Image (cartoon, rainbow, N blue to C red; front, side, top):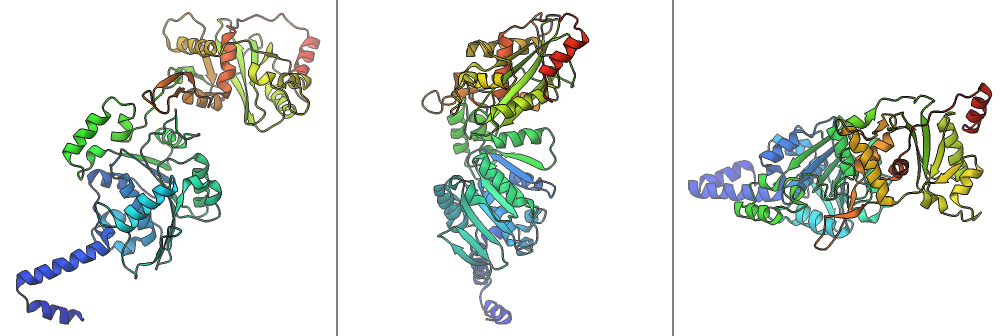
Length: 499
């Protein structure tokens, strides 16, 4: 029917009938293209304004039912549909400022597992809706095909949305160039790394929506979201994190908000569940570590006592730290070694080069790692280091005592008037600093004690810290060296370096 004919038909109706027909038509169009009518609530609008062109990674941290997943759905579809699709409709107001490139765009949507992808993202958000109509337009002129078998959506403008499950592993995230990757909740870091690589050649973006329950003390093996958040707080310009609270959501009844406040009050996860804050449920082992411990790069006087301690690993990270003891007995960690996947002879050669001819008074090695035997030679790791020119001795220490001993040195640094020797770390030792800032007590993962601390730290981010603990346990003292002849200095320097 032509427009003129339709208007003529309406003119023959009463005003009430004509209005009812127009409202019905508008409602039908609204249901068919619901995303065009999406109106973010005020806090969501503030969040969307911060997703600007210079941001590579945009993170939305939100409590449960705060609307973060709805924002993720709308942003992902807006990337696929393109800005022209929204022109003239209410949703254009928030879409117009998003850094959406011209279509066609390739979009990935990543859920934690198959069930989440199918039930929450695909069915609830894209296809069927729940408390609102589905966000995916029901228009064959816009959507060419939505394939339920492999969770792919093909648009007439050439864009493609592909939903993927993070638990399928990083191998399933290779090959393509992606304009936007939306990751809903925190997956393992290797999947994130692979997704990041897919956006590099086309200048794509990464969108993260999550409730930050998996803090630096638990959850994923590598707390990459928390690390990104720390980088954002330090001012990294291509990162942006925003927060949404369930208490800001006007669509949640006030009585339900009150129930949530009562339900989570005092719980270790309260800040995450309600406000999208990171929760450090089990706590840092050395929370006192901070700016007072960091000193600029320096070379200790040759008269200071020097100790090098090695934390070996047949696979994974082998770490070593250089400590100089000043006349007051304070510990100065001024150099580090942090390498992985090398054999002992290669580590030994690299350690000698790193040592730069320093006069080392004592080489220590972790007693557990040092006593392990090589599968081929049946010699201990400590023996292999000795055969390769590193005269190591096994450290004698109780694990709990080592934790406390290092803590005493760190505490003394920030305690005014303390007569206890102190501990300092060179600004040229980033791995030591990272570990001290991420070394946490292990937490119970289930039961009544869930989220509470155990009595031992997590075996993670502790390679350099272990070597520091072994040194601290010795309570080393400054011992002035006797003056050496030039010949003695040359001999010692040659034995402590690699040429």
